Length: 484
Ligand code: BG6
Image (cartoon, rainbow, N blue to C red):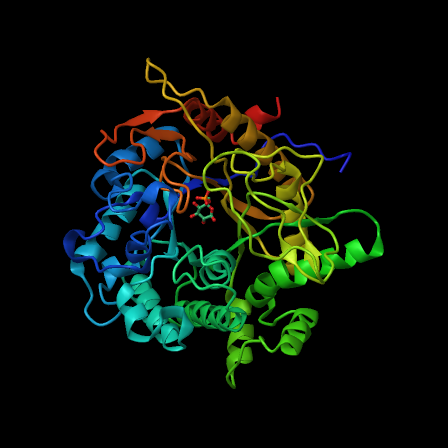
């Protein structure tokens, strides 16, 4: 808004950074860890850029102390990381692996020692393969009980030390890529019926874990992290406005409404019933979802880009097309759902080398939407720029493009706060460079450069990028330096 003037961020604001186990840890078979769906998937030829795997990743498993010391030196207030289910339960359930429990206990203690608030993601996509083999993983409702058992184990062990819990990372993404576009495990294509059923199981797993957390007496913060791509109607043509409304119901509110209200959006449900792909719900599910919705304390948002919505005729584009996983600009396609919407390019905005739209205002838009629709506090659990970085001969990395990207996003976040949004934390993606699931190691996100390319065997040495020093100052001044 014209009058919005920001000078700094609220006191106690949690400046953070985030990661995920599979993308950083490596040690894929170390100390009793079980195999996961990703350990298998990356071995299928053609699935990842240059067949990269997270077998070694950036070796955080052995270097976590060094990494957390770098976080401390930067002044990070919170560190969001995920726990690998298969380290805790190698078979997904049954026997607990004490070495897995100890590993994360060490990470949590290391964070606390440096006054860094640990923020734990219970599930960031790496599922024990044993559960896939036994009953199809998320496809079977058995997963709900097993997920809750796993989550309770984490609450039991770490609940006194960890005050921020994220049940699921980007349920909308891992299910879409897993059951619609075949780009993530289990690699199913256009299985819409199963896609909605899998989502229902995930909602139930989330809800039951939230309720268990409260039943166990914990008072901390708990919620899910949603990959929120806010939409703008192409123009004021009514059919484009409806394309936006339909997009929001099917692509955004379908998840956020369940987390926040415990119910599915009506128009989307009516549409899915007509198509015969609506999820089957059991008696009592709705009550459970509603009860859990009352217990979450924030909406987690992973924000990378916005989109444009335009009416898509029945013979128009489909949701299935090429995705840019190489960093060659302009190689992704316009996608959409025939008869409903499509997502053309935004002529007002630039894109990254991977064709992701760069839109700082979109972050403000997300916060305002969540505040108006749900009235919930917000944790920005991811936001960042994937880019090619170059280490110079003097070992410096001049990533001014990343500084610019983050700076513009944080400023818009500041405006959202000034306009009444309650934002608790902001986590950049990511702290160190890491494996970008489908895009290999060349797509870098970190403040800390890791010396490795697609091939194994590099030094893995850590180098601070220019953005490291910049974020250090942002934290030190509680954001004030951005508004001077
Ligand atoms: C989010 C995920 O989707 O975006 C991360 O939670 C992921 O795990 C990040 O790495 C960036 O996506 P990508 O495809 O560029 O790695």
